Structures are given as structure tokens and as C-alpha cells.
Image 1 (cartoon, rainbow, N blue to C red):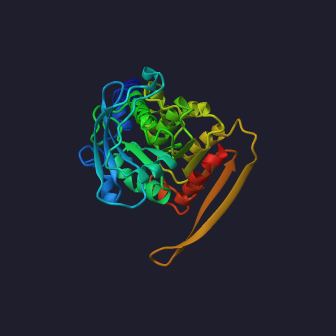
Image 2 (image 1 turned 90 degrees about the vertical axis):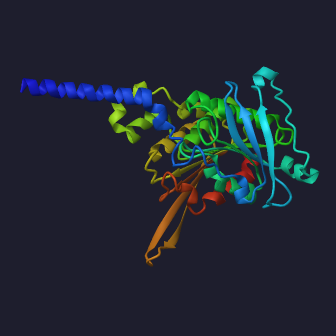
Length: 361
């Protein structure tokens, strides 16, 4: 029996050591599966495939990593085909290095002045994608912002994703996001537009982090199915590593960062209550933190609709809206981690937010 106990203890210790090693050395691979789905590192769809004219951009970050991005400027005729403007390698230094002035970026001479005037008058959305795939997989979302809401759209593949160089990490992706914002703020057409940050899952953490570090630049924030922090997420997604979660060096502490975003900054938070990856309690807690310092009255609305399935069965889909000051909450009873953005009313709510955010600030 004593030998068995010793053997069992050794097995437990060995398992714990293995778990610690997996978490410490392999967490970047686990958190940033940039090669999934298959082909994500070599195949990136283009906006032209969705009838959007675009600029193909390469940004260089402050640590000399080249990151691929797309820019879709608004124009008179949307949708429109036949336009891809190759914008060569662009380096935009940190605004701190240029006295806060940024760098002037040339605009393609083929663009019509009337199109540029429209682009100047519309908001600009920066899209930060989830932890799998690349920016090409988010083009259907970009198209809704571009065509339905008539926004300029800027999106990128983080380092180590799509055709971007480097390896993904928290500090690296922070630099990528900052390079994207610096580009937009230095662009002669976009620098005077209202800026909205949009992020799903880990893209929500990128969004919150970037907004917290640039509170004067952001005019609105939209996050969906994101988390409090990576260490707090580990017990749910990797329970066998819970005991060694303190070894996590990728933090993305949104619960702290969100407190640095001014209460006057409009924010839309969207949660799928069937999220199987990020427990909905994470989004709910972020909402509580984001609204904890406002005295505005909370206004709640509920709604539902009936849906008939292929076999004739009927089901009720429910959603709930809450508004408190400049903060909006939307939850879907049947929303999972990857399909919340397909729920009825999702894009109608996003559209309402886009139409009203400037009045709330």
C-alpha cells in the first residue's frame, strides 16, 4: 500500500509538472491557434471577393514586424467592384516618437474627390479578429459595416496570422493594434473620422486594451463574447491546468483595462448565453465593471421571436437589451461562441449603436 501511495503521489506530481510545462511553454500555441482552420496561414480572402474596393496595406510595427491589413474607404457607389489599390510597405512610427503628430500617408490619386468627401464624413471601424483564422474570415462582418452602415473599415491579421510576419503574443499583438490605430490617425482621410473599435473573443480583449491605452482616440467600443482575463479563463477551457494557472504569461486583463476607458465612451457589449468557450459570466462581470461608476438609470428591454425548423418544429429565440448611460448590453439566449453574430437582431442592434454613439458621448 505504501508503495502504491508513493507511486500515486509520484504520478500526481509528474502530471502537475507536465501540466505546468504545457502551460508555460505551450500557452502561445494554445491561445493563438493561427494555423486553424487549415490554410489560414497561406490563404486570405480579399475584399474584392465581397465586392469591396480596398487598399492592400503592409504595416511595420515598432519592433519591425510586417503586418498585413485591408482598408476599405467609403465611396459614392457601394457596392462597387474592380478596385484594388496596392499600397506598398508603410511604416507608421509610434505617435510618441513623432510628437503626437503621426506621419502623413499618401492617398491613391485614382480615388475621386467626391468619394473622399464621403469617406471623411463617415465613421471608421477597426476590426480585431478572434484567435483562429485571419482577417479574410471576417470579411462578411466587414461588409456589413461597409455596406449597411456605410463605415470606412480597417482590419488586420495579427502577427503570425494570415500573411503577416512574426509569432503571436500579447505584447506583439498590442503593438500590431497600436500600429493599426496610428495608421488610421495619420491617414489624411481617416484622421478626422470617428473611430469605433470592434472585437470578438480575444479580439474583444485587444479592443479593450487598445481603447484603454488610447482613450482620447476612441469614440465607441463594441465587444462580443470576450473574457475577464486569460488566467481567469483557464479553469473553464483547460480545467486540468487550473492549479498552475499562475504560470500564465499571456494575461489580457480586460477586467482591469476596461476601467481605464472613460465612462463617457459609448460601449456595446454582446453576449451569447450558450457560449461554450467563454463562460457568459465573464461578459456579465465586464458589464458590471464597465457600468459601476455611472449613476445613469438602467433601462431593460426583452423580446423574442418564433422560429420554425426544417421539420416543422417551432422554437422561441429570446434576446435582452439593457442600456445604462453610454453603455449598451445585448444578450442572446441561444447565442454560442461562434454564432452569436448570426442571431436575429444582432446587426440591427449594432446598426442602432452606430447611428447613436455620437449622441451618447
